[in-house]
Image 1 (cartoon, rainbow, N blue to C red):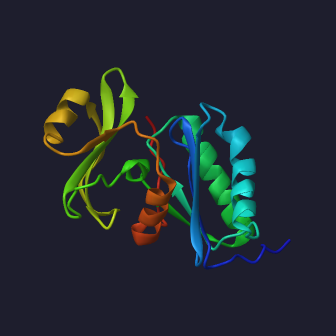
Image 2 (tube, one colour):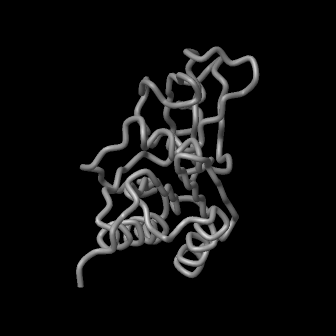
Length: 193
């Protein structure tokens, strides 16, 4: 069976690396985001949530690009999102762009200068975090100052001293989507906690 014709101007972003299922959909006339804490029920919820997001936007269920949060995250959670994204992309004939999940944790707090660095981290258990430091431009990661790396919280707090620090925040689907469109990689790899 030939692939369904994709809609090149529509992008779907999804992340299943955290306890949240995070989605974003962008098309020429708008953006929709959705996120819910699902614990370990990503596999049960992702297909219905994606279908609902497209339906709410009044769009056919197909896109020209899929952005996937590549982790770090739980082994099962990260693989659920990647498998689903790759399956959709194969059916739609779409490209899949990978972005590290911490880029979806970035927030642009009021008063933050666009070129100021921000720190983000995810709990990696036993007093450890996966931490990264990014420089933002217009709310998108423009430069990786410290790539996501597992380290103790104390080590990361020293590295992130004085910076706005977002720890275990709810992933922002629009931040993930914008990062994917700006610099998502086609040769991505998954990262696990």
